[in-house]
Length: 566
View 1 (tube, one colour):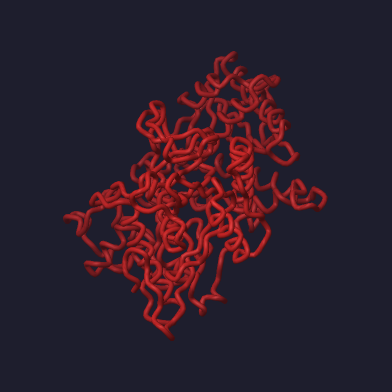
View 2 (cartoon, one colour):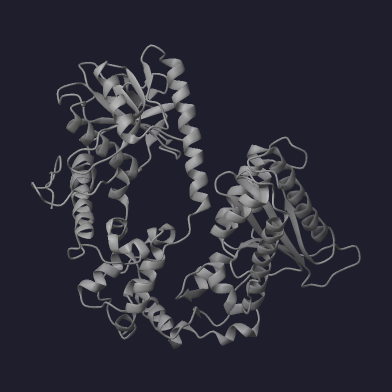
């Protein structure tokens, strides 16, 4: 295994060290293995995520705006490496700019080093005394209100000018710190880093979503367990990932076996890992992350072994979050093929005379293009009431677009009208969604972005709606009153209520692909058939929400066993 610090080159005639970028230090070790295992070339993989491609496009656009701003503010210092060239050529051109002493280098590519590192920096900044420090540009928030962050204006991205910002504190973003450490090691290897005595050495900067300052980090400071510095944490992680990748590439005994973690939801290798974990009935299918690791260490490796434990005894290992009896019940439910089990005899769900079920469709971070809603009258329909059933409020212009504001305004006007009619006629009202995090985000975002457009409500009106008791998140109901052995997503839970989606390919990631075709994002004419497919998908999501809450408040829910019975 490579040692700590700068890394180590392979011995003469030994295996070639796999090339790793900074992302490997924050990825699952099993993913690193599969990325470098030649035998995994034909293993099942998830389809490309269109939302990921859109996020990458957004990042490229964000970085281009930052480069333009810095170049405009520092015309004498600014030099840029052309895009579109092979990485080796861009690294050579970066070296020429370093040798020439350019003040700020945009789009820098660093030479691959003997330890197997590869990487690029959005900016390299020369410091007084010689040498360069990295600045990375990201599309997420890097500060919170407060004080203590070391910042410089974006227009003067030089670490020696950093001062304590009295309005910002650093938001923890380990991936940014580890990437800066990765680039710092590469700069040292290339001979481009400042010496240890130079002001600004072992520092790195980050430009975030707000794009108005550079936040500077001391990579020698202790931010990690045991008060380790960022560089120490990085060195340990990188050495480990190199060892994992090298074992995979050479066919040696694997240093990383599959285990379900949070990252699995977005990992392209999940189909491969899921098949093996299911075949082995691995305990991580019920309890993931560190808990699964701790259970394996004491010999509890399968769901069956977990299910056989006595839920009345003391937990065999610490179980953060979920009570021990529930963990055992989940394992027993999984073994019996049950999707859910009740915690209580009667599931409390807020019901009303007039009810609306809501589901929103968005395209990544770009915007919400469709608001779907189904109206029903459990208290009986009255003369003058709108018809029951589903309706859609959509824009088919590629988001973001001002037309998104128009469709949102129409949805809000309709929803507010239904609620006002219920109140005027002395009836109760309720609106439902499944996992309000997404709906609430786009309700608030739409009200903010399109403020002043006809029909768009003030943000405070949206906040009042979100806070009301009659805005009901059914995911929260499921999370509190059910144990879910196979996941808590709507498509896992609604089938228990007897609901099924008409489209066998219905799913969030597939809807992203359909959307690209529906609005002609990839150069082809817009596809009306895909628009209809999206409307059908949204209709079923809305009706699944309705079916689930109705099922939870009828005697049909008694068919689901109580967790205590497991």
